[in-house]
Amino acid sequence: MQMPFGRHEGRDIGDLPDSYLRWLMSIEMRQPLLAEVEYEWHERRRAHERQSRRQTAGQLVATVDPDKWRRRMAARFHPDHGGRTRDMQIVNEGHRLLCEMTEGATR
Image (tube, rainbow, N blue to C red):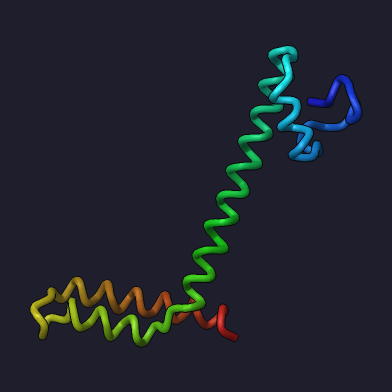
């Protein structure tokens, strides 16, 4: 849908700046346009939240030492320490995944 009026007349709603979308949501306007503006606003917020989560996960992975993590988990879940074999298999799989993830983050 394109903006039917104003400073951004003729532009696609997806191309409007965030500040203009906020302003549009604060004024009274026709329902179809309001619905489109609100949809675009919420889609941008969701995209921003997803991106923030990805960045946070990447930062956390970059700070984890997979070998230290595995030693801590083995102390809790290894069968010799009262854990179950399946739990230790999960720890080993987690260690493998952390090694793969940190390999790209540290080099």
